[in-house]
Length: 367
Image 1 (cartoon, rainbow, N blue to C red):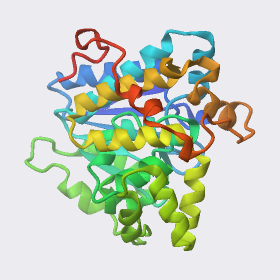
Image 2: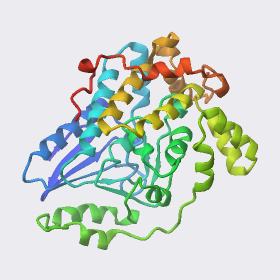
Image 3: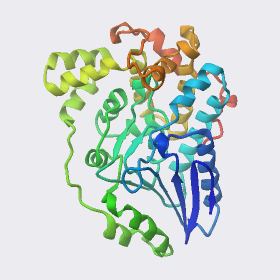
Image 4: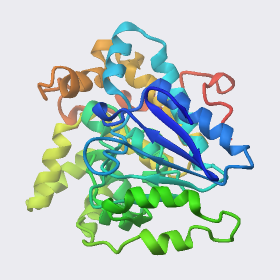
């Protein structure tokens, strides 16, 4: 067994096992964690003795705690204020890890128990089997901190049916197991109390068989206890509109409870980033995963160094959002502009101009 402070790396039988072991931070990803995960996956990819990989979280609640609450946003805040170059390395290496997982040539099973947000989605959405439980809460809540759904979020959200991708990206709505499976963001549900046995049983499977997981699924998967709760017709009606102001205006005009609550949620998010995110998701529908990740790498640089608006570090939208949510915890972000209606195209479109020539892009080598 090889382990480090925040990742436990094991091999049992023919299965490589990865455990995120930073429970006090809900397994939020750090740069050392990203590097440890990447190193293990690259080593096992070319190891004929490893037939499959599984990944889980660890914590105090439930058998596996929370899977992963995202990237370590406190680190983002500190690094942005101090000019720490590790911030750039984090996003480059995290997105390369996301790409590796999506194209992994061996079965990769993600046990998405508990909280699965942001970066947690990045290391699970590319899995060949995405496992949820009744405790699972999935989401991409980045607009809450003045960021955008990264880690390939543009790619996997834009490919959901109808306008569900726009809805999830803009609002940051969290999903339970039923909605996650219904939307195609998860594959199978397990009873949370069965997770330890299911995890252990993987190493006993005969991986030389044509469908080695068939008996495992039959033993451990369960039928969902609840159906979908999302109002599909309303989501498509509002979130297919051409712009964020049109969406909010239509939601206000509707006057129903869901529409009013959704409009109120959008008004709490960064107005600037709502416009950026809508453009991101709609562009991503025509992009490969590699090109989407390159676009997101451009976007995240602009989020912390918004040169066209003369904002950087402390004055950037993202650092202000993190300050309000996780540092000062006053939940009163000073968004610029403050109103959705005041965002202009001149503020938004420069986010989509890469700060690097193609041959110098930090993710230029992704396939």
